[in-house]
Amino acid sequence: MDETTTRIGTGRRWLHLACTTTLTLLGLGERSRDGVNALGVLPEFRGVLVHDPLSLYDGYVGARHQLCGSHLVRELTAAAEDHPGEQWSEQIRWALAELNKQAAMARADGLAEIPPERAKVYLESFHHGIRVGLSLHPRVPGRRQSPARNLLKRLQQRACDVLRFTDFPGWVPFTNNAAERALRPVKTQVKISGCHQSKAGAAAWLTVRSYLDSARNYGLPAFEAIRRAFTGDLWMPPVALDA
Image 1 (cartoon, rainbow, N blue to C red):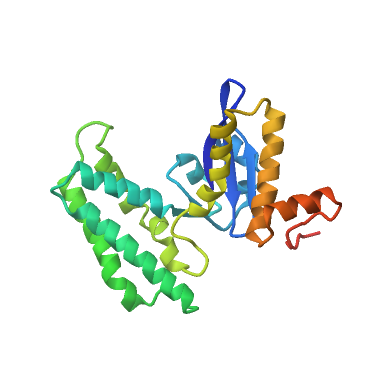
Image 2 (image 1 turned 120 degrees about the vertical axis):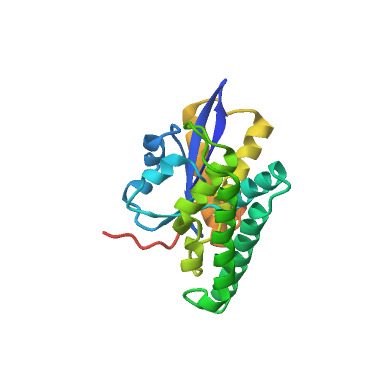
């Protein structure tokens, strides 16, 4: 899952995206649970949901979660820049990168999991880095804590959601980069044209983008997908639906 903004007339509207390795769905919606639900995907979703730290996704308790590794790496990089004399952020970032490499190797080898002996040193480094970081950034009085401590507590309390890609290397990705790639043409369109003129026009354009991105995932070029749509030979993804 991912989300961003687009312009309709003089105002900004939120749009949400859900995708798999083969299917893409974009739609307008508020920046809220109701806005995400409007896509019709997450209310009954029971798989693994890969997303950024936006808190509204955490409310989908029927799903399991994978926090996007790219977002975490960016936060860890910022922490390293903010605290140049501390090594915990670089250690955690290194451990995550190495675990991602091990997941890719396990996937290539057709393994259902990373062999424990391969993962052990990196998992230990990950948890050790968190403990060291928390010792350097203890809790202060009041509700407001430092960005470094908030990041470390999230890594500690949601370690299973950070490391879920190591449990299922064959089908849970480390990042939600696929969603970000699917959103890139939307941002490019806004930069070029400035805005959509109406909500209906924006919704129609997002439907077309969903169709074209899904077709591309199946190896069908955008021009061919458009040609088929206009000549009565509409391409549809080969997805079996329950009657």
